[in-house]
Image (tube, rainbow, N blue to C red; front, side, top):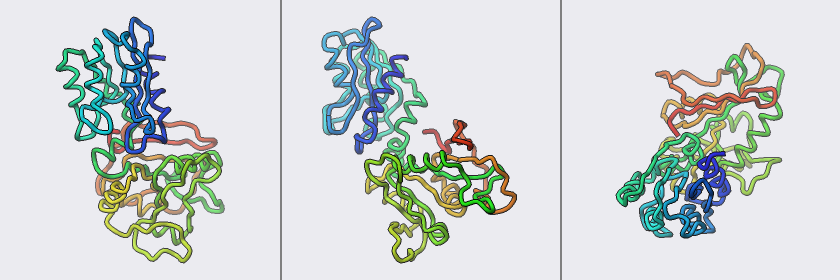
Length: 314
């Protein structure tokens, strides 16, 4: 494992604990020996770089710091990490990704370089993916939107005579996705047709996501969903202001196409089942222009194949 990969691994220890802060991991290396490690947890207050540098002590002087996100340069809950990096006397800093937060965005790197310390900026995809929801929330003021759908090989969202399109493993993974999201949403057409619960079931979930319905009401009597009837962009901005960083979209073709046409989908997760339906609704409606996909990946999901792609750089 490389030192930077170790920093990414450490950052994951803060998953689900950082609140409105990103995941950050840091490793201090001197003469090919790890002398300090740290990661950010909201309750710990101190940032990953400071924890790693304190652990390294005097061994940090002339050492190399590997950190997954650009060190902050402003006074927030803690003093600037860039100042701590400079004070430690490091020889070199390897940064995984620039911080998109407008109050940082390059200033931390500039501060460190101005002190004569060499800085290498990787703009590593894994580092950006690690904080993909937080990055969009901070830079665009809306939640990171993932559209998830189960589909057949011929692009249909239902199979005659079958309750489910996808297999058991894919359905379990959807509940894991819900558990990892701040909110889950469908459109009113899906609400009326299926009365979905949208909760995370039979998986470890610290809290349940907010469960939303986009579109005009009223909601059916007894529905536990939260109606969001306004324009999509306005509703997303309102959700972001309420702390929603990630939104899992599970609606049908109408809602998916509306989000795609508005440029509001960041990632696609397509669970493709090995079946040809031959009839039924297509997964997407008509789009006025083609949409290029980025960083396409495929992996098995039980008997299905999960395709993942981005609409925008994470």
